Structures are given as C-alpha cells and as structure tokens.
Length: 188
Length: 189
Image 1 (cartoon, helix red, strand yellow):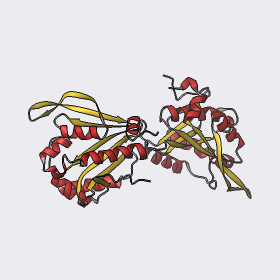
Image 2 (tube, rainbow over the protein chains, first blue to last red; image 1 turned 60 degrees about the vertical axis):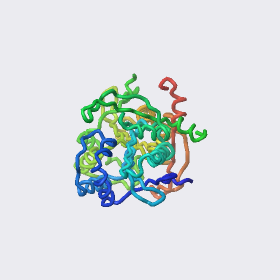
Image 3 (cartoon, one colour; image 1 turned 120 degrees about the vertical axis):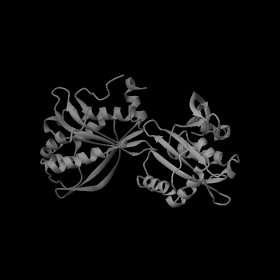
Image 4 (cartoon, rainbow over the protein chains, first blue to last red; image 1 turned 45 degrees about the horizontal axis):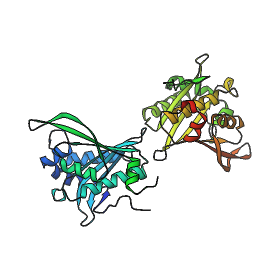
C-alpha cells in the first residue's frame, strides 16, 4: 500500500509542541501570511501560548472529527507549514485549511502537493464524500493551487470582509469524491 | 418528513438518569435478563451506582454514541433501552445493543419494533453503511426478533460463553445499508 503521508515535494507529519510553537510564533509575525491564512485581526501570540495550545490540542487528540498535520519538505526535511481536516462525521464531509509559513516555499507547488495529500487522505482513508475550503479574493496564488489539487470554485460571499479599508469577497471551493476518483484515472 | 422516533408499538425517548437507574436497579435483580444482555458475570448494584454511571456516560456522549430509552406507545411505559455506537467512521459501521428489562414486553414484537426504529435512525439519520450486533446462542427469541428486523447471520465465536456449566456460542449478525433500503423502499431517499 502506498504511503499516505508522502507526496512529491512534502510529507505530512506530527510535530512536538515546542518545535511547532517555535516555528509558528515566527510565521505569525509575517502579517501577510496571517492575512492570507485567517480573517481574524493579525494578533500576536506568545510562543508559550502556542505550545500550550498545541499540547492541549494533542491531549484531546485522536478525535475522529479532527486530523491536524504539519508539513515538511522531502528535500531538506524542513518544517514549512501546517494543515488540518475538520470532519462532519454524519454527512461524510470535511473542511480543509492550510498555511505555508515559510515564504521561500510559496508559489513553488508545495501547497498544491500538501493539498493533494489531504484530499487523498480524506477520500481514501476517511471515506468522505466531499472536501470543502474557503479562501480570500486577494489570494489568487491559493486559488490556483487549490484548482490544481482538483477543487472547483463553488461560490463567493460578496464583500463579507474589510481589509485595509477595502471590502473583499470570500471564495468557497469544493471537491467531490467522484470527481477526484475520475482525476485519478477511474476506479470506484 | 416522517417522525423517525416513533414505531408501531414503541418510541425512542431521551435517557433520564434517575428514571433509568430506578428501573434498571429492579431489572438487574433478574439474573435471566442480565444473562441475555451481557456476557459478563451477573452483578448487582445500587441505584446510586447506576445513576452515577449513566450521568457520566451522558456527559461524555459524543457523536459516535446514540442512546435512547424505549417507551410503549399505548401507555408511555418505560420498558428498556437501546444504544447505537459508531465503531468505525470510515466504514460507517455501528454496533447496536438492546435491552428490554420489563418481562411483560418479552416475546410480543416490542424488540423487533425498536430494532426497526434504530435501523431507520442509523441509516437515514446517522448515514451508516452497516449495523452490527452480537447475540447469545441461548437467546433464540432475540435472534428471531433481529432476523425480523432485517439482520443476517454472519458468524459465531464458538464456545466463548460459559453458563451453568455449559459452553455457548456468541453469534454475529449484521445488516447493510443497501439491503435495508431494498426492504424499506418507502423510506428510500
């Protein structure tokens, strides 16, 4: 059987809370990263707080509705980001979120590769029927990456955000199990 | 949409720890009932013990647990309980456990009716792919009820039970979503 956690450029990992906190505290100082990843104001959170949160998250661990991952490069084993799947168990659907914190790895296919792994995990391991995601209109790089991973644009909520004094849209994308299977060359 | 919690003889209702523990404390003195319910040695317990256990169970109840009490439609009488526990989300398989503590309602179709209800709930509300149960060889009444509700025989653990100096098998039964939909076309979505 193939290694579900290994792509072409990245692999999905689980990291120690201290290590995660060190990296994630650094990433959040990048307000552009923050604004691409989240609609909340770019707040600063201490490394300790991130570590505590990661530990607490791990404690409740292994809940069937949550699958968090960190992302490392295959070439130099560097931690570059994180992602997670949040499931609606009853309706066999999940929301996926991703953040690549290391700028040198933007626009080079790393996000696409990680997203492909998450979608494969959702359909082949979790048995889901659909994966959903949201992004912001001012993030065309993410839109392209998600399209490459197989997501289709399904709609937008117009001007639901105010960023730097300008109203901007949220976009919503999704991929269905059958579409993904077709992309993989048939089978059921 | 139909009321999916009402059957023809019984309905599914919420678990009230006090009501449940009072009734169950009586039922568990009936060693035959306990032997039909559980493979472990029959144990007695106080109402307080039972209530604490139920309360804790309800507090921790998550999406993979669906517990109900069973009430008759005729007199609104509390006669037992049933629980559906999802054991495998990717496979969407749940284990079902049923106990009718009130002997007046044995062998009269109440168990069949409640099992039909929980299958409808499992397939149409929790969106399961299959439902599994185990039953003891010395409980032919239950086996018949489960067969009537749509379960098929799938296997047995030979001699795993030991009662009154004799070994008995534990039987495995299951029903698949597609089989159930076929038998219940009027409910098909």
